Image (cartoon, rainbow, N blue to C red; front, side, top):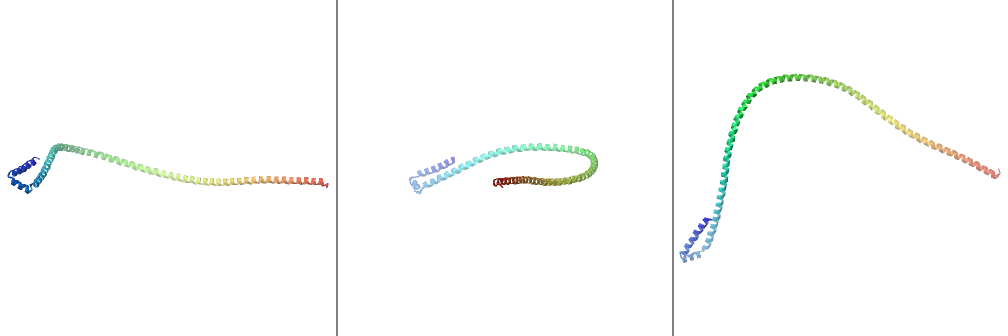
Length: 230
């Protein structure tokens, strides 16, 4: 903004000096049309002023970013020092672990020799156990054979029982069939007996009716004889 004021002042001052030079020269300027040029100059000055403001803002932004980057750089430097210290600590730990590893390897070599002796004892025990397992397997085979024999006997007996059960079921079915037939025959017999009883009753009624008719006929004959004198 200060640069704009300075440039504007210089141009205005120049124009004032040009006015003092004489009325004729001023008239020539007016006739020449300097107003448009002044407007153009003012427009250009405003454009330059805006450009300068943008530049100043960019510079301010860059300064802020530079300050932030410097802070980040300082933080990175601090982190680098911290990492260096950690690396040094890790190197010391690695060296100590290397020493510990060597000691453990030496101990392991001694343990391996001891373990080899134990392994030999274990192998001997394994051979003994395998022998016992073979004996047990043979016993299991013998028992399985005996069990299979007994199972076969049981299966034969079971088959016999099943066959007898089938025969019993068949006889039971035949018995039930005969029983049903007997019940049917008994029902028929009872029905026929009932029918015979009804028939006997009917015959008795006929006999009685016949007797009644004969009595009535005899009585009527007596009445006729009595009245006819014959």
